[in-house]
Length: 257
Image (tube, rainbow, N blue to C red; front, side, top):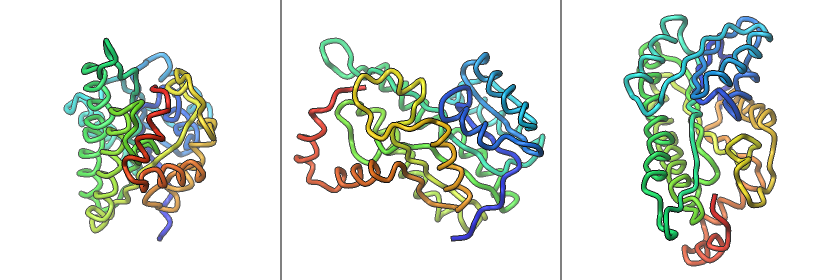
């Protein structure tokens, strides 16, 4: 497994807060260009200002990643400034997936799939096209340990992360011949505005800065899958390997998101 060259231009979606903002700060430094996307303009500018204080050149853009044309235009504009070395498809959402009477919320379910799956596809495809054209580049797809197995408390969120996890794993060998490095990132619980809404115990909860360092280390080493913390990753792997009925009984006791 060869080490990746240090990226000089990094594009990150979902960089206005949480893990995306932490990743921007992890890479920020003199000679580094950051192209940052976010939904909240104010928080995105806060991230950009902090990154600039570390010497980085920062461009920001606010748009909806579910809009394929707008996302492709962002990639094209970033490429025009300087070839992108690393794209981190990080934008994602979760939510209360329970509708009235305990039924599944159709609106929340569709919104989760639109951002977590379509948004990732909309980011990765134009970036991959540009990178294949010059025969080099790296793409990180942020999935989750929740994607290892269906989760009764958050079925749409887990399924959306399982989809992009499998897609990234399939893309890696397919695009390697074109010089692309594809990594799938599967974090456990990270302290972010998203997890702050959780009202249940979150084992091995870690700070976003720590998670960002682990992700960067894995990308530097061109790891196919960057899953952490290892204790929770092992547990999720075991749950996925158990007979379905056993997993249903164990997971059915957990509260929803």
